[in-house]
Each structure stands twice: as structure tokens, then as C-alpha cells.
Image: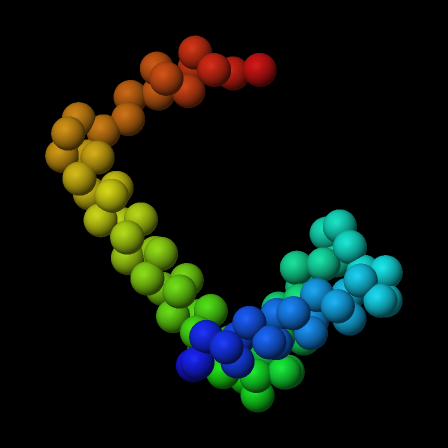
Length: 81
């Protein structure tokens, strides 16, 4: 997907959200849906691929972390609020 197409769709969606007073926790779902509409669904496929790549990276990091000794909970216990 050409970057200029994505940027144009994002700019249009941001402008529409602002014009409609959409913000806060409603902004992300609105922007994702509107950008998907404006790109004919191409951005959705791109976002799904990004999520899959992030999951692959996270699993690789978790495997390496475990090989290094993993997480014993002590760090978490020190930072509880």
C-alpha cells in the first residue's frame, strides 16, 4: 500500500474526527474504521499483518527471555502500587 495513500486517509480521518468532535476512547475505533473505508480495506490488511508481526516478535522475545532465566516475579512484587 503506497505510503502517500495511507497518509492521505489518516489526515482525512483525523480531520473528520475533529470536525465531528470525536475524541478520547472513541477516537481509535473511529479512525481505524474510517481509514479502512477510505483505503478500500487495504489498511485493514496492513494492520492485521502488523499485529501478526508484533505477535511473532513478542513470542521470540519471550522465548529468549525464558532462556535467560525468565521472570521470577520479584521485579513485579517490588513495583506494586
